[in-house]
Amino acid sequence: MIKAGIIGVGHLGKIHLKLLNVSKYFELVGYHDLKKLDELNNFVFFKNVKDLIINSDAIFICTNTPYHYIYAQICLNLNKHIFIEKPITSNIKDAKTLLNLSSKKKLKIQVGHVERFNAGFQCIKNEIKKPKFIECHRLAEFNPRGNDVSVVLDLMIHDIDIVLSLIKSKPKVINANAVCVINDTPDICNARVEFESGEVANFTASRISQKNMRKSRFFQSNAYISVDFLNKKTEVVKIRDYDEKNPYSLLIENSKGLKKEIFYENPTINENNAIQDEHDSFAKSINLDKEPEVSATDGYNALKLANQIIERL
Image 1 (cartoon, rainbow, N blue to C red):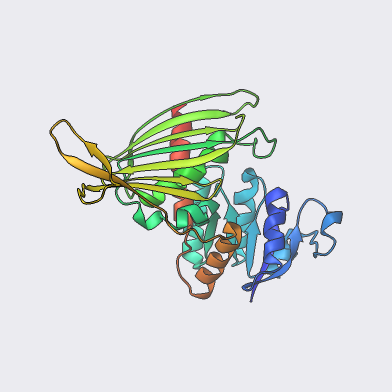
Image 2 (cartoon, one colour):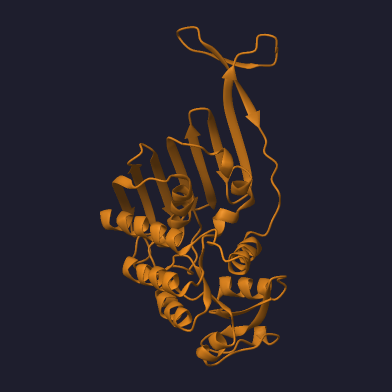
């Protein structure tokens, strides 16, 4: 069992805490926060954060983003593996420092881009091949949590990470605009990113929407694939040669008389707890000494593109 501690037990930190307490890979040591919480009386509270770190093999950092780097650096210097909630840090310089330090000390860093483990995405990710156009919408009703950073780092970065996990190419052209509605940082943002290999991704994020939506659409030469991250649903529409013998074919015909038919696929979605799965993935990377599924490099790349989008605003 890997001894694990948690720094920061806000809304998300509490979820991590309770899942670690029943994990088959981790043994929960305790938590550190500004003060002991009465609702967590069943868990060990460490007033001194270094005592928690020293007594653990791995630390889950679930604080507000500005504190990620501070605690991560302490953990790495004390030779502890770390799980950091997204984004990896507030800025690229700090992220690069953590990346280099973890590599030097041969320690694992996994970043909490939890949508990688979403059941809707997991069942179809291997079918998304060379998408030419990607449309991402991530809309949320207003919530005071997460407003310490731009909506790009709060919400859009989830979709940035998903896109970068599929497109292995550098951004070439970035255009973006945004609006500050209730906060000093942008609450609504739209960005268009063109990659060197030709793909185009359009991102829209809002944290003052009247409804919640987390949906991405992938358009490629042989298919249209839609992933509903909120409801964990997937839709796949493909085109094939027209079968005249099939009376139920959904026929389409162009001006030149070329006939094709549309057909639908319904991938099997295996229900899961995405946060539990990312815990298990992190544990396996430690036990098997392999690169985490969402590595520090992935966190760095997502943050880099997010910052490039913010610079264009």
